[in-house]
Length: 112
Length: 112
Image 1 (cartoon, rainbow over the protein chains, first blue to last red):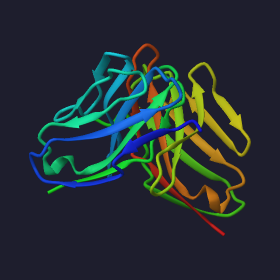
Image 2: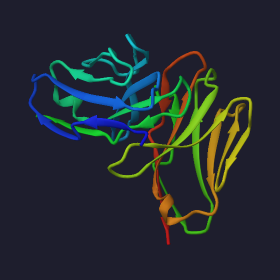
Image 3: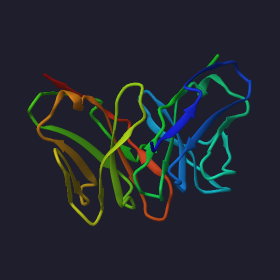
C-alpha cells in the first residue's frame, strides 16, 4: 500500500530536549515536505526536499532541521524544542514538484 | 502576509444542496492551485487541482473554478453529502519553485 508514515504520532517533551520525528514514503517520490498546522494559521511549510541531499527552507524554518540522506526518508529534527513549536506536524511527498502531495497521518507534539 | 486566503472559517450546507468554498490569492505568480480535504486525526488528502491555463476543472461532484483576473478560485460540491464534512484547504504554487502555500482552511458541515 502506497503511504507516508510518521513516527511518533504523539509526543510530549520538555523545552530543550532534542527530538526527531521520522517520515518515510514507499512511493519512490522525489519531493518531500514538512508542514505544521496551527489554529487560525492553516498549514505552513517548514522545509522541503526535491531530492536526496537537496533541501530548502519553507515559510517557517526557524528552530527546525531536516536531512535527506535516502530518498524514502525525511526526518524533522528539533534541536532545542520550545513551547511555540507545540503543533500538529505533517510530512508529505509527491512524485515531482507541483504534483499531488500525499500526506502522512500527522504527529501531535506538545513541548512543555 | 497571507498569500492564500480562505475568508470563511466555516460553512454549513444541507445535504443535497451545493457547497461553495472560496479562496483568494494575492501572488499573481501562482499558476497551479489545489484543494485538499482533511478529516480529523488524518492527514490532508488531495481532492482536485487546476492549472492557470484553465478556468474550470471537474471531477465527479467536485468542480474548481479559477478567475485569474480576480485572483479567486472556488470549489463547488454538488450534491453535498454528509461524508463531505471536513476541513478544506486551498493551496497554490509557482512553476519552478518548490514552495506550496496553503490557506487556513474552511470547515464544511453537511447537515443530513
